[in-house]
Image 1 (cartoon, rainbow, N blue to C red):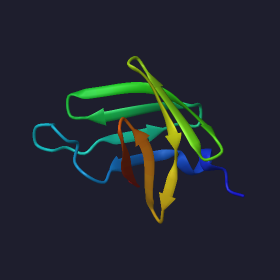
Image 2 (spheres, rainbow, N blue to C red):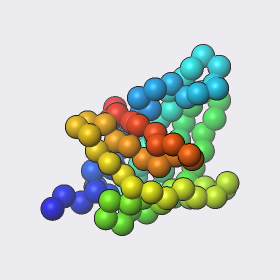
Image 3 (cartoon, helix red, strand yellow):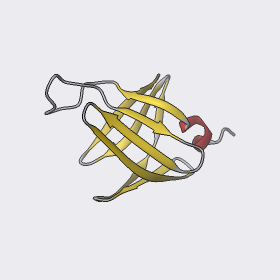
Image 4 (cartoon, rainbow, N blue to C red):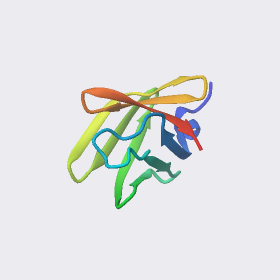
Length: 91
């Protein structure tokens, strides 16, 4: 069985541009082995922590936390994000 936490490591970019952002930039997510994650779009960088348990992930930052299932469909990663899911591709 593959370790979902290890599959997550690395750099991911949003499949779709970030809604409501000028110029419709894509967001970049950097998942590190030590449980830290960094989110970067133009003029904004946010840091959080994450924890993986089986196929579930919990992302925690200053605003609170989000938790839900992680899914892979080929090379596309889907994570819980607010009321919807967010999709990412590996960079």
